[in-house]
Image 1: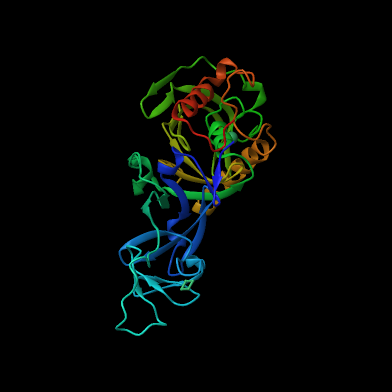
Image 2: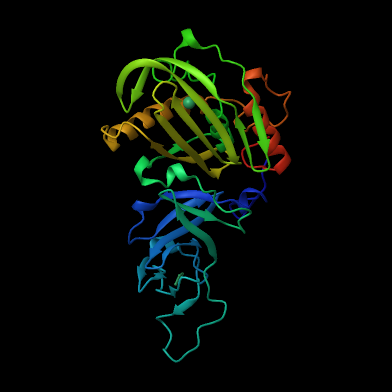
Length: 334
Ligand code: FES
Ligand code: CO
């Protein structure tokens, strides 16, 4: 069970991770409040880019995310103290202009950046930069951000579900597989320092989809990969045509048992399908996952490998659990 101090979940690994917090294009002139590991964080946009502060004014504890942006500074809604992008208070309206602003008048600043159409925040010091996943940066592949989806479950359960093959024919039966074709071929995994990935896994789908449009079935070749404690990626290639879909799934832990899930989807086909239709299809698929994940017990992912029954097709999930244990991730694990 994770320790909580003043509302923040203590986890020395996830504290130093980049967490997805908001869809870039949705952050315009108003600041917004988000939750990262139980901590309230205010994000806002200035001419220089995006910024994240602890959502707490040092004066009397008001929420800075309820304030507004003036001259690229974040203004507290309570008494109008104004903080620059480095978190330094540059104006206290109630005091005369020639009075010095106290040294301690500062907002707590967190690392913040935009990538893949998402705003990312790190509460501590980033262990590692966000990886370069070119398929989500290449605009010819039309990357689309889906979600965020609110899930009442541990983020670890969501990532693990994303690494799972054997549910495709059941949870997504008719959309991503069929129970008549549930047998999985042998596959292997490779573990590197910062990622674990599968060999190619061919799965026959009697009906194929681009967006919500159905067409004749085909064999899809999947590769799944976990590359951060809360991020994973898959590619799904049509064996005949080479048409490929890539999905990045990244999870923001709000608390031990609640999270927000962001997905970036890109593709090299199906550009005639509207973005809306494409996103709607991903929404449907993810709602099917969320439904099952929210029923799982225990809610926290058991890292003791004897706690649940691992099967040979679960090798990626088992490796993920081992990795979480090695790293010492506590949020969402037991
Ligand atoms: Fe923020 Fe007073 S509480 S200015
Ligand atoms: Co699924």
